[in-house]
Image 1 (tube, rainbow over the protein chains, first blue to last red):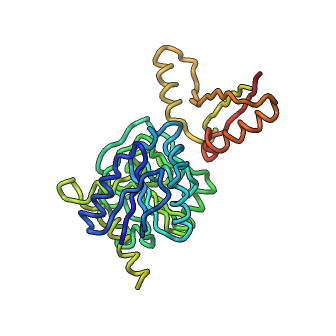
Image 2 (cartoon, rainbow over the protein chains, first blue to last red):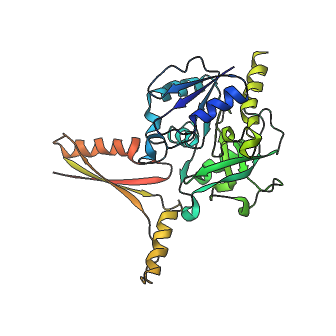
Image 3 (cartoon, rainbow over the protein chains, first blue to last red):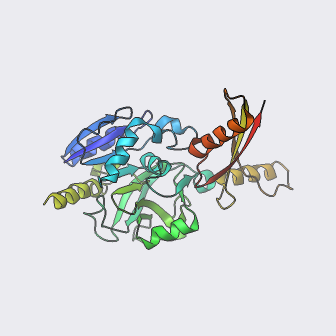
Length: 233
Length: 80
């Protein structure tokens, strides 16, 4: 399969995602400039982490108007799997492809460390190879990862099982103490109603080899491979 | 015309920056500070002589880009 990684001016995890998809997972991968409109035959699209357009105005607010985003939206509308990582998640929120918004972390703290994250749902293209309630250790590095949605939206997310990842403890317990940034309901990642668009704040692509401190992130990209294989079977 | 756009977090959204500023003011000795809400302010100059049209235009801009309606509300004023 082929992963296409979108490169915005200010992306900084674009090559990490490219490397994880190609060198680690062993699939085809391409880097796609944000001013292009061709996703280069992608089977899955990754919006990477970083600070697209310097995070000017609001995180992701300018990036969502990049020409490539119309193609990404059309791809998602056809059911194509799209993964937004960190800043990529923020872009998906600003683009309205996922519900809710990000505000500054509580206590105005930039959080940069390896955190345990519990997988809540396995019926998405990016968690299909996970075990239910599996705890993944992945790094976070963000100042605005405090997930917010109005009460109705939050209730709908929970009702439709759209919360995919929650900040947890090492044993998988989800408590206020394991909430690293003030996100409502400890939300670390969500999906859309159709379940093909997934956004998360932790960085799976930076946790793909033991030398990096954790290889737990591999399963996120491996899930896309598994999900596409089962589709084409 | 010139327009001014004030963007603020909705009352229901916690404002961590405003809280830190409020705490700092109290530390500075302003014990009467009860709360601070931080927002954004934009001045837009546009080639539109009609005030009503200018206001409608800038309101559209605020909706589309300057504010995120999920967390923020805004107010638009126009001037000669």
